[in-house]
Amino acid sequence: MRYHRFFLPLLAVVILTVSCKKPDEYPIIPAIDFKNIYSVRDNQGYDENVYVTIGFTDGDGDIGYHTVESGLNDPIFDDPASPYYNDYIVTTYKLNNGTWSVLDTFLRARLPFLTPDGPNKSLKGEIVREFPVPLALVNDTLRYEIFLYDRALHKSNVVTTSGIVLTTR
Image 1 (cartoon, one colour):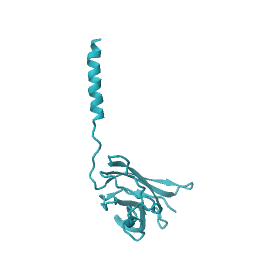
Image 2 (cartoon, rainbow, N blue to C red):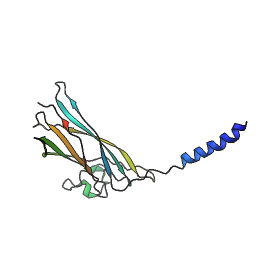
Image 3 (cartoon, helix red, strand yellow):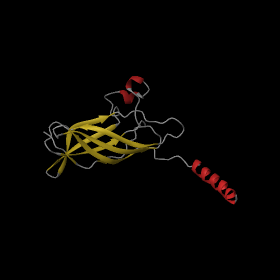
Image 4 (cartoon, one colour):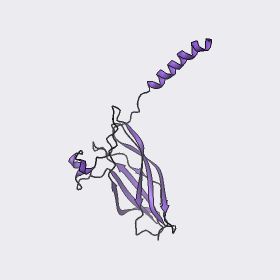
């Protein structure tokens, strides 16, 4: 009986503390960090695709676009000639005699509309993208530099993946 006198107020304090937790807050400029890189091989043991995982946060949640057909985006995001048509931008580097050089492989993508419903728009998550192995490679080492744009045209920081040795034909 004496335990009930202390247990119920303690339980109420715990519930109030947990329920009063503030939502996560992040800067409105997207921030990304490199998480993982790996490749997948075909039946003959050659690398076919590279997968890269990045983590991201964005305080106002304005990451990603609606489909072009929806008509819900600002026109700058639906014009293929616009530098903001794609919001996931990748530069590919190849290791040549100890020096990284840029490949003319343009990897860009449009992320889907990620803004959550409700008053708290903060976003935190991971993005996994598949990159094809460039055809001209012969057992080379690659790495990638990646950044994002949000719909306010904020550019995230740039992350660099670790190098990955690829077995190719």
